Length: 339
Ligand SMILES: NC(=O)c1ccc[n+]([C@@H]2O[C@H](COP(=O)([O-])OP(=O)(O)OC[C@H]3O[C@@H](n4cnc5c(N)ncnc54)[C@H](OP(=O)(O)O)[C@@H]3O)[C@@H](O)[C@H]2O)c1
Image (cartoon, rainbow, N blue to C red; front, side):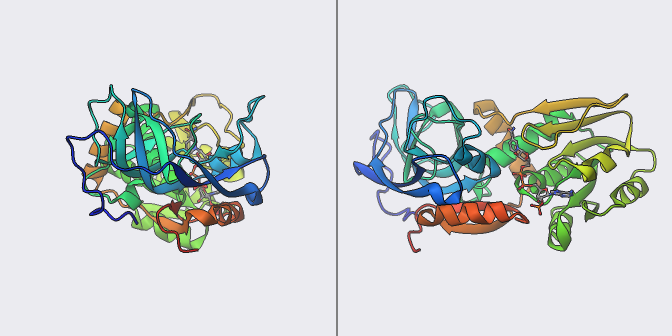
């Protein structure tokens, strides 16, 4: 953990002491978890509209593995490529145009495809509008686990589905990073929540998160359980896993019902007659983080962390991710250097 008493923030200054080089976990080529290795790299410079964050916690998600494997490879990849698209930490430097944030602020951030390197690093430079103060009720470790998953969960419930009080929702694949938060946001909006999860532990977890009913979504009779919960059909479905289980859940949607899924859910559901299908991406921005902070507070959000790895063991975290059955979210503890 960062020693928060060290470098006590002095707000009259625009910077704290920052070393020239830093430890990062990056890749020199695309491939399996083993391609993630330690790299000592220069600490990135901040442009006028950016802040430099001393990273405390970085999120690990399946999109990190996709990038590692070269799924989004550009024609001219810039190696070494430091992975990691979200996390939390303390601002140690602000660009000359930044007014909203200051040195010493505890912040969290989601910034996709950063040419200056990602969050699997001791320091990251990001545009200030992708950064926000951490929610009051979370510490850096838990805040660092939710920028991507929290924004994606909330925008799924509020923007994609427009979920209303009293409606019935099925959240399919609720035991992972996005789903455990989506269950809580759906409850916050006053919906009745049927969650499908993976395995006994997953089912237990989503019940703890507030699902009114939960079953293993890999059961062949998952739709019978859903139908019993929603005899008139579900108003909405948030799909966080694809495949047969999802197709069974879709059969329980009422005519005119809505189905939403973030891009990346595979196989993606196909549109059926009488169904509104919404595909979306989680969006990062000032307004989006204000809404997330408000929802975290109102929901008294709980953030289940499945496992935490020190930064030098980032490749182990990816091996774990590949094994599946992660209940909650995997994070990297960047300032815990014990291996
Ligand atoms: N486009 C965007 O902006 C965006 C942002 C965030 C996430 N996403 C996408 O959204 C999806 C969810 O993300 P995530 O981070 O929450 O992933 P995750 O942590 O892997 O969660 C998915 C959960 O669904 C479970 N599951 C799989 N098959 C199931 C089934 N048949 N029934 C019930 N549960 C099942 C998984 O369990 P097992 O591991 O045991 O199978 C896992 O617990 C991913 O596809 C991701 O790529 C997109």
